[in-house]
Image (cartoon, rainbow, N blue to C red; front, side, top):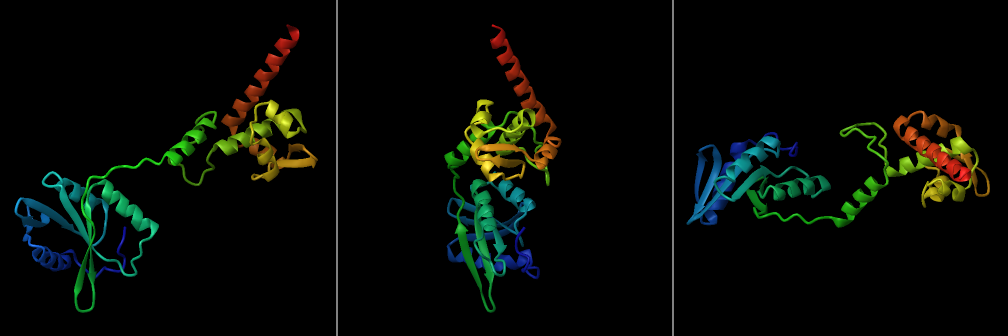
Length: 249
């Protein structure tokens, strides 16, 4: 997961730097006790440190098991060469904090070693992202159904935007050239003008000022989104039936 440049460093090489650091902090240090790599005791305080060359699932499982003994569980790894606080590393740290684990990084220099306590174990309080939550809810509300398969890779995802474009394409396919205002009367929504003018998928063609038709690419696209197309064509048919019923009355 990390640490490609520390292949020559063994887990046992982490022990002496950690051992010396803990003793300097006043801890009594013990190693390999009941499968725990390092245990530090100071009065009533007990901390456990798991040593690994890199962060992986096995390490996380081991560390969380140690939380049955004490809340003070750390993982210690060698500092990767060229280490930077990238988004990837921040995500790793966020995961460790959520697991309420501490992180120690050991730097192996030419003549010495350095210990960096990146963060201590602490109770993690999740701060909700209300903006992201709102975005997710709006996206769900903008879809007419669930047309995607979870975990799909390299497949076109049915988003609310794409579905809106399909709705517009279905209208143009059925009724021919239409203006954005007329399309909105069929329920295509307030983004109709933007979708037509931006023409992100290349499905539409402007034939005159304020009038659009379905491009050949759009007709091809309709063949690729069966469920959504069926849904919107059915809506249009129901709308026509409703209008016919009103006319008879």
